[in-house]
Length: 148
Image 1 (cartoon, helix red, strand yellow):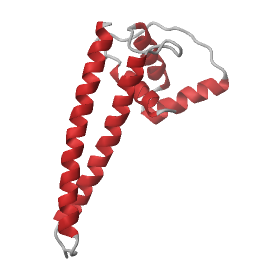
Image 2 (image 1 turned 90 degrees about the vertical axis):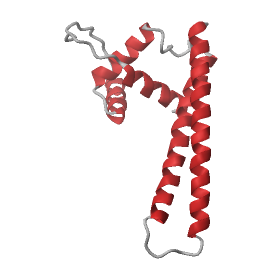
Image 3 (image 1 turned 60 degrees about the vertical axis):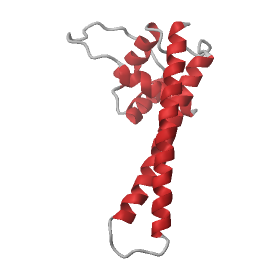
């Protein structure tokens, strides 16, 4: 699965709005055993119930937030690539913070610790700038997509 596809699925599944009234209506759908297992596996991976995942995807499509295969636009792909890129940048920042924390925790310093700490600080600052730029670009892409 492409990072953008995973980001799109995660975005859609997590965005399903809570309703004040209980959902009581049902729609019955039939799946093969393999399809059902794939749905349940993906829902488990995302920390969701299978019905929540299916419902979120269907409602996102009906609300125009998720296109079916063959209906995706270049803007959809761009937005999802930005989301995947932001996740990767955040992981880099987390790793740099862990390095800085270890070096700042005290203990016996190694001769290269000061240089590594300075580089970790520079990396964290660069990642913050990159995340801000990705957020801005994603916001522009989303706004342009909605205007179209």
